[in-house]
Image 1 (spheres, rainbow, N blue to C red):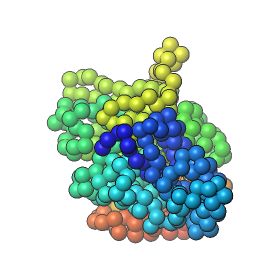
Image 2 (cartoon, rainbow, N blue to C red):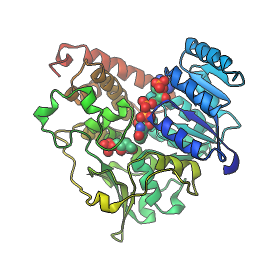
Image 3 (cartoon, helix red, strand yellow):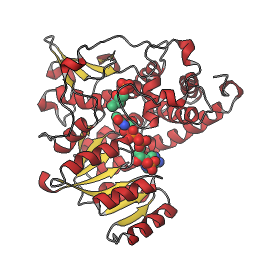
Image 4 (cartoon, protein in one colour):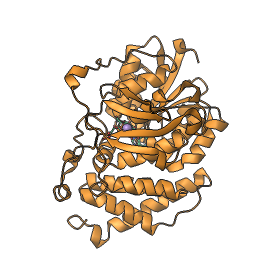
Length: 406
Ligand SMILES: NC(=O)C1=CN([C@@H]2O[C@H](COP(=O)(O)OP(=O)(O)OC[C@H]3O[C@@H](n4cnc5c(N)ncnc54)[C@H](OP(=O)(O)O)[C@@H]3O)[C@@H](O)[C@H]2O)C=CC1
Ligand SMILES: CC(=O)[C@@H](O)[C@H](O)COP(=O)(O)O
Ligand SMILES: [Mn+2]
């Protein structure tokens, strides 16, 4: 890929990762050009992006919003921007022949098929959408190999691990131990409730849960950080990305979010990647790989940071971490069920229908109520995702899960 004319499709352009990606691209407009930008409902934000970046294509969720966007672009005399809507349009912009790089930054399971389309077209895929990999793990990684796609992790911890692994591992799948790696150390901030007692967690509000101490992110991932399901999803993500088992991944709570993760080697070395908590660093890494790019991130001032703390996670207060590890160990469709139940539970919490502690309870109850099977195909994954959502919704509306009870 020639970086002088790199064409980018940005899935989830109106989100937190989307905005950080636009910021990096704007700093390097001579090197990166937006082919397509997508959103689900945020039509005003998508219009702003179109006016500023003039991509070739814009995709939005509904036909009504697409019509609205077309009219605004007509008024601005930007009729050359092709506007379309729905999942088929997302697949098209992900696999378009002229596209070099696809940033997969749609939130949740909705990102799976567009991200897979980019993989199947052999693109360089910058993976922020961890849920896609959690759901479909082995199938997804097989597709990456089969279609010779380049998969670069954007999730800050996995990007850090990728940077700390030996260069020759890039793009290969083989046992970590053959490269002298003994373990992966996955750091976790501990979220906004790291020091809170179980009692105090009973009545936390969505706004409290979304107030992450170090990162500014979308609401779903912010709640995941608060329950530590984010770390559970990341544990599964690490196992697939780096072809390892949960036993080789150690979660380390590090409240400052300066060390983004580490790799331990057989000779006792531990390599860490550090930096200010700013997603423009991994995004710029993914865009420029294997070279480097100025991301506009403040240099790390270690004197200002002054101390780095590390502690063990508490799975009694944050059971989601255990549930995710058990789902990975169980294999098959268990991680897809975990992810689907979690998406239902987090939305219910954000809508005021479920308590904070109810999130883990609903996920666990859904896993217990839903039979798991072999993850044979993407059709099976999508079918089981839908089935687990129905099961979680049913449980949610049972008396025991009503607000105030769970
Ligand atoms: N934010 C962060 O710092 C990090 C995020 N990630 C991961 O990156 C992904 C995006 O996170 P984040 O940017 O925080 O999320 P946001 O909620 O901020 O943004 C999500 C984006 O996806 C779009 N979207 C939502 N639902 C759909 C759908 N059904 N179909 C198509 N598009 C949809 C949204 O469009 P609209 O605006 O119209 O709703 C928006 O553009 C997640 O998987 C998250 O786990 C990983 C590491 C760090
Ligand atoms: C920025 C990023 O990668 C997030 O996933 C972040 O790591 C969340 O922080 P927690 O460690 O609190 O889950
Ligand atoms: Mn992360």
